[in-house]
Image (cartoon, rainbow, N blue to C red; front, side):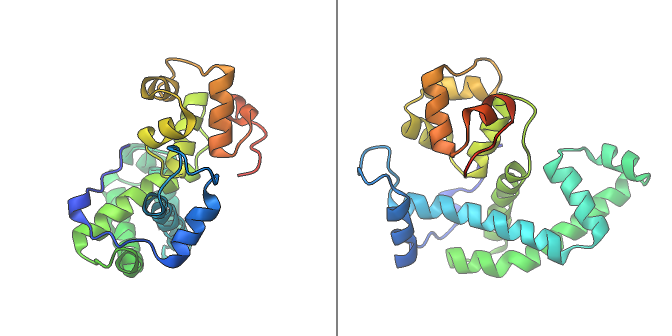
Length: 213
């Protein structure tokens, strides 16, 4: 799923001193073309931070039934019909639960969005939380194949294909082929992806020995 946030829909505030310092610490120190600017780092990190807040809001702001339904829909990618069959209720009831849960999460996080972007417009909050859902889903999913794991790791860190290509030196077409299961990385590419994501090669290939994030 692509990042649906458009630049014209938000007010992006330049990184704070704390974010600039964090970006410098996260940088390799070489100031090469693969390094993120403080603004790029802050924008990406803010998306990850919002996903973490969303996860916490799901745990604290929703009822047990709402939490279960949201996890099944967002994290496990179950359809409304599948959730209804599993819970033995109507699809309409599932839709109502999801809508109620989204409204609660929207109310709980709108001030955090306003703090990040200095804009609490309804469209802005909806766009930011939509992106946070994608990141949160990736953070809570391992993936059944190497391609799915690579995709989840990229989305977990809120990294675009273009940025990942710049960091790893792997062409975009190759990255797309990996994620779509049409090709497998060679050893050099595998090591580059492992380094970029901070996981072991075993995790990328087999889902084992996650490693240090």
